[in-house]
Length: 276
Image (cartoon, rainbow, N blue to C red; front, side):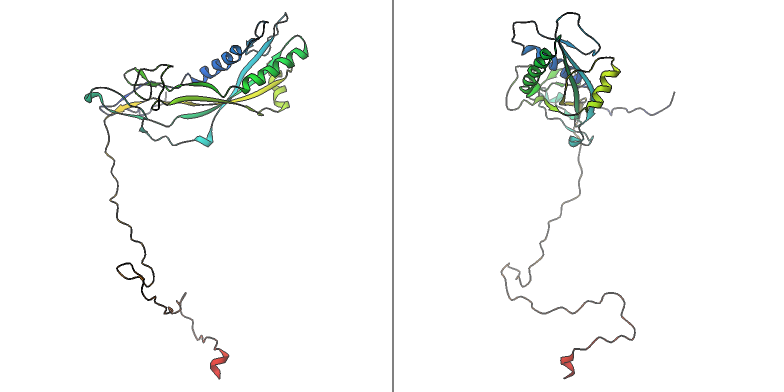
């Protein structure tokens, strides 16, 4: 077993649990629930499956939803520096400490959506309904952001106990956007179905953008030391007086500046007009 030094929190600091470790599973559950909640037909809703090799024996329709890739959103990549959290905590003056957090980890989750029905035309109708239903999904998740304090309390950004009904200008909302993307080629999709020992089916690819929040650290305020700021002096304009008013400009031309060492046995070319 390799030996290494462990990080120890300074005196007066405490660390809470991770806040965003369940967001990936919650996005997948919201994906399923959003599709099923929009079913308004008289016949039974389609079955949600993640196993592409599953084939029903009756006329049951199936929606295959599978998250096949998760990657970091590099366009929103931030540094890992600790900064004060955007949260207001109500408490006694002794408990009024500063909460620190790191920038969240922004992720992109990619989902493969396929359909199955007894007849090809019914599968295409189900695919069209899925397209229009997911087209209305501006956000898969829209709720107040949950802050888990080192004490174990769950609050929102305004310091109130967390609830889905919390609202206000000071409440930060957590959003997970969904969009239709062209991420898999036909060859990649064929290989994906082949690996799962399933027949090729019409498919769609979607991308969900979410963020994973780390833990909060509670501790006393720290002192930030900076260099003393010196006043900046603007360069004085040519011909400007001390009181700021413009005077006569200095029109004298400066002599040519010698570049490099002086030449040896060098005589400049004289102008023909000077010879007269």
